[in-house]
Image (cartoon, rainbow, N blue to C red):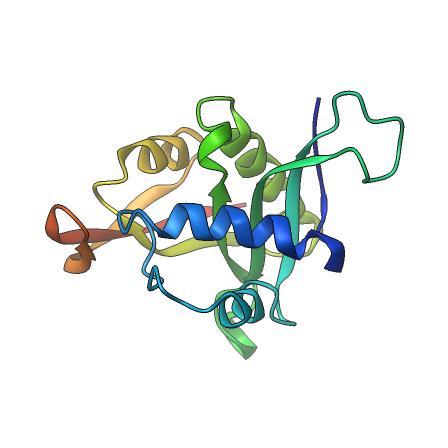
Length: 170
């Protein structure tokens, strides 16, 4: 059974493993695949973010000891001050958990959580256009492509690749 909960300090190692595995591919995120662990975790868990993990609780009798962390995401204001009603988010799923619906569960949960936190819209500033699985997922939960940034991403194998700005009201 998948459960989504607020991330805790004890989740940092598992979250790092997911981040490292995802960014190593050089095909979906702008982060340098060689970024130091501490620098990346400082960014992912920075104070303005609400950070969550998706866990497999199968066989767990309670608590977090028997959980396997399958994915992580964060929500934060996209802009400060008068733009803080629109949230931004980032999501990563462990490659070992691809195809199991974890991304969809996190997406659906995050939309409700963003509303609960008082956000009125969600905006993604940079979705790599060649990441078609993510683009399809975001569109299926109501995100729209509202802009294209030409050649904004240096894809590891495809070279210069467009990125999308995606948006939806909550």
